[in-house]
Amino acid sequence: MPELPEVESVIRGLRDDLIGRQLLGLECHWERTLQNCSPATFDERIQGRVVSKLSRRGKYIVIHTDQSALVIHLRMTGRLYLARAGEKLAADRWLRVSFLLDDGWQLRFSDLRKFGRIALVDDLPSHFAHLGPEPLSEDFDLKGWKRICKARKKSIKTLLLDQRIVAGIGNIYADEACFLAGINPARPANSLTDAEVSRLHRSIRDVLQYAIQYEGSSFQWYRKPDGSGGNLQEHFYVFNRANECCRSCTKAIVKIRHHGRGTHFCPHCQPI
Ligand SMILES: [Zn+2]
Image (tube, rainbow, N blue to C red):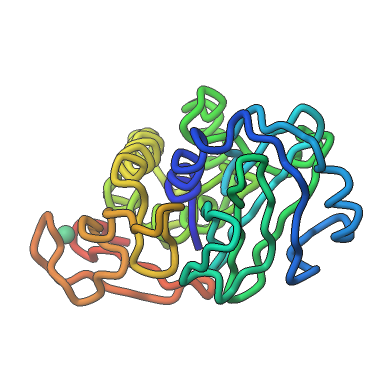
């Protein structure tokens, strides 16, 4: 599933082409992709709206207009890209919704597995009320993070994946951040020392920041709007590298199932 860096890269790939465009309506090929309105209502409510801004909250893409905002979650296989009206692209095989733009282009949403969702939202703060702080913002402060870790017996990996605790991290960057901090992902959060909690706080920001620079990881489905992939998968420390050599100590990376999620770590650099 695309995580914060992938979602951010999708937004960066669309921003210049979408800001200032007027929406003329939509064509819907799979109703359930539209989360909170019927296709007819959605179409009616976006007609004539002008895109003013694109932003991200956790793993959500937000396309702001002069009235409501479109809030998009890619889930497993969602892709957003631009195409000229009438133009056929490979990803159109799973086309679910097309937004028609005033310059003859379309913003298309393709989604093989059909889990992706697009909502029309008037009140963004309450729509996102369930989400924890943005890890790259000042809201994700070390003091608060320490308090959270001290109070939880759950594993640190479980905590990192909980969008209510911190928004935007998924399986890839949870494993990578734990490696960078030298912390075994299965350890109870409240067993971490102050130094470890600080190191992990720093690692979370570092891994997300350089993942954005690499435009995300494309080892699976994720593609940028221009159809090309990100590049971080070539540089993973532990994720998707079971039995390969640790880049730090050369011991073999281990993959376990932890609460149902594939979890990767180096047993030497990240002891239990
Ligand atoms: Zn190692």
